[in-house]
Length: 315
Image (tube, rainbow, N blue to C red; front, top):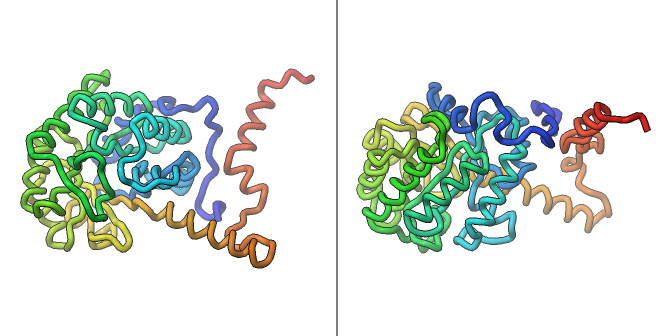
């Protein structure tokens, strides 16, 4: 239930992505400087982003897989840059203070396209952007049929992303955080993935993400052999990477733990239960139904009405 550990969101009509005292990238950089590994549930629309914030998590990630799924599509590069940028802008507009990292896929083209993508995501209010080394169209990191560009093209893509982040910011703290991802472990082996991670670090990436290590030892190697910048682990139930606890990931050296599909899975599961109950009984499943007042409060009616009262003319 929303009432269990969730505070209600504030009205967001006048509270956009840049309304906080510090910028979204600065808040993310501050989080990354704190000790420990930070849990990062992944959102896919404004409502799921609000739920992450209301539940007290310090950061969220707009998952390309989940955003595509919310459009009724698989994560195979079918959504365009414009569609993704629009989705990111809607998500950041729903958040009050929690920084959000957005999935920038391959940058939607060559290195120059990647620069445009980073600049657009920065203007959309994101705290960070993930850029990867797959060929286009890309695929979910835990599925078959992946391929990556060569080392030079991959590094140029990251270098362009870092340049765009710096060129669009007034200060280093306010530059959108660049997360560089490699999928080369699946196609060329972990040694190649670590080589690329080191090259991405040297090109200026702020966070490294080596996708789909297959064991605890491989996770350990990722952090130890590409040290010097924060790392993200991707915890996908049923995926290729061991799902470790927050403390275990922190001990290995990870700074962020992403949960990419849990909210999407929960959404599908709850809607299926409700639809099955409606079909069988004409009533929704009780455990998946909120009191109407709790629902209206969470989506912002109370805050809207309070704001409307402030500007009432008495008519």
